Length: 443
Image (tube, rainbow, N blue to C red; front, side):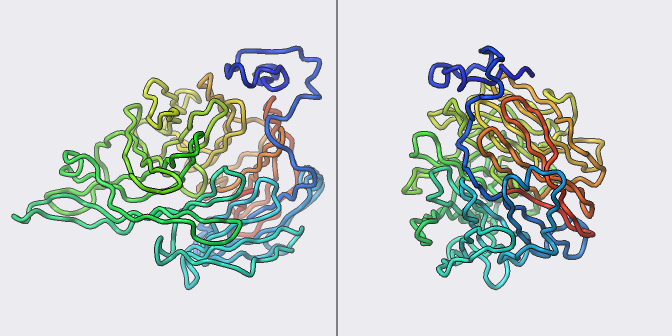
């Protein structure tokens, strides 16, 4: 697409329109106003997941290493997180977040003896990460394997969510009634390292849906709305066979669902349903919803084997906008697309790592225009049959630059830096790999 398409800020139209059809003169291309805040001297932290038993399983722990932006952008510079990096506390793949300015990593230990323990790391360059002396363990509320993300509220708050193993409840005559687990929603004060609030409740679907066996299996990827008064939490749905009590491997889905709770009280859970598509909205290891420049929330879907991934829109009334239908299959001209992770980059532009049918799980990168509802595979990246983004977590957005780590399992790769307004791709530092390992993000 033309560079001028995305120059809303440079044209002074940021507060008057969100349409991506306005253009300006190309004379100021080199001086375009950044679409996002830019941090001078920001550290760029690479995270690598170690193999445990199978190549690419990422269950052997996580190591991190940080470099300057100048080194990150230098294709002649090499980064070896496995030989030179520092481990972060996690029995399996760490689920990391970073501050906007890159100066701090946030981590909740995933499984193991310290599962559920929240800590921070001060980023000091190279393998120098100073762990906070203060920690807080949330496992008694959210289990030892909580799903969590930070909110986009100035790095103040993280939200962890969990659902206990759903159990079958029967009627007095022993007939099937419903399947439910107990949900936990917990907010963390990341500045003071303490629990701000938590609530626990069963989240019911409609009586008809529950009688058919539908239930929430997992919660994930909470997002704070523009007004700052609601959290929208993604769901992973499952279905019990009422006659046998067994989970059904395949079933007719009900539409994509999210849970909306009041914020900051975390009370009053309500289920909202999209009629556009039927995938889950929980994501996997990363953010799955973002507040767009227009104030609406954009949310990806997964695990819809019939229709592939969609991006849904939740309006500022905290309801699905069923008039907005964006099929990634249609936009890319593929079948069975699956968004592993994605990142909103400003002015309606986003980038996603994805796979689709007939690729044997190989990953690709797409540039997405949420306003035009178009997508295109990003050229200029060295794709490989062993490139798997299934555990990918982190993108860095800094000014006009989006940083992404691309390494096939067990093979060297590179950082890539994408210019957000133009889509131009530049190869950055070389990422040195180890057999069975892969880089899972930039922070």
